[in-house]
Image 1: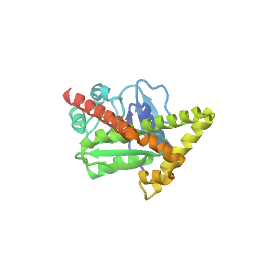
Image 2 (image 1 turned 120 degrees about the vertical axis):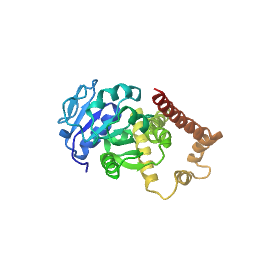
Image 3 (image 1 turned 60 degrees about the horizontal axis):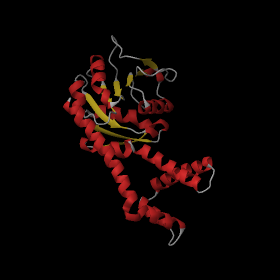
Image 4 (image 1 turned 90 degrees about the horizontal axis):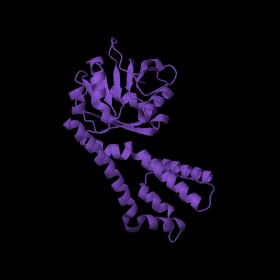
Length: 270
């Protein structure tokens, strides 16, 4: 379980809200959490909601930045005086590097970048962590905070964050689009729209679970489904024609990674 101490969640939009729901579902004491967000109207019972950073309070044990990357400098200026050297600063901001975090938030000794994703809300997420010089104790604290949200993995090279952001951070949106496309295609073939969506959801959920438990690669599993001259092979032939599908997916991730790099460069130059 997560160590004791106050947690400030600074920004509680889609991703911050997903993390908050994941923590509460896992049993963390809501009274330990303060959400600081001027745009939010309500929070779950027991969680404190503030529109601005509090003054005159003891620094939190952990402060998690979950605002839009473009808002980072303004937010950093507002919260910097309230953080202590023992505060563990955790950032989920895409493109904001540890060096930039340390430049504007100099007090905390421990600074860790993380990239969660939306399934964190139901404990099925994947969170990637990176720390340049954090202590083993702070690394363990960050990993424990993320553990209720799903799987936790570390990277050792911060430059990999652009790829991580594109694959696992943005990836759920791409999967949702694929599910929607499957459902729409099923409806176009004559299925009721609601039934087509149920079939698409169940197909993707079951296939992902099978792929996660199988010793075979997803590519090998696809070949197992496809009988020679059968229905699946006919569909795969369309997907594989000219490598259009794989190229399109590659271009999708490349665009997301490029945007992450742009955000990093912009924050670095400010």
